Image (cartoon, rainbow, N blue to C red):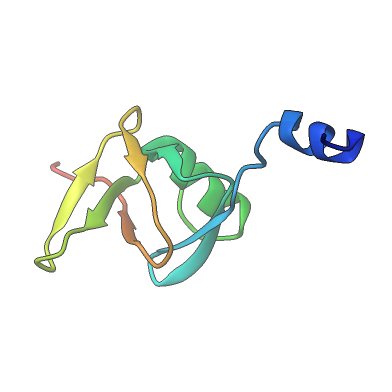
Length: 92
């Protein structure tokens, strides 16, 4: 037999876990393990990083190289993951 507290705890939806990544070497806290490139940039902007939504976002791969993350591309983020946000190239 279970108590009403145990039933209530089982019925509660799981709470999202925050994840701290770095963007341009600064910590950025994300609300969940899934985020799009644009959501990562918006979180960084909201937390005071001097970037804007037009910047190009890249994620550091295991080989030390960076891979571009599109604004609508979902990313499974993990603690200590490194991102780089740079202004778009000026090809004028």
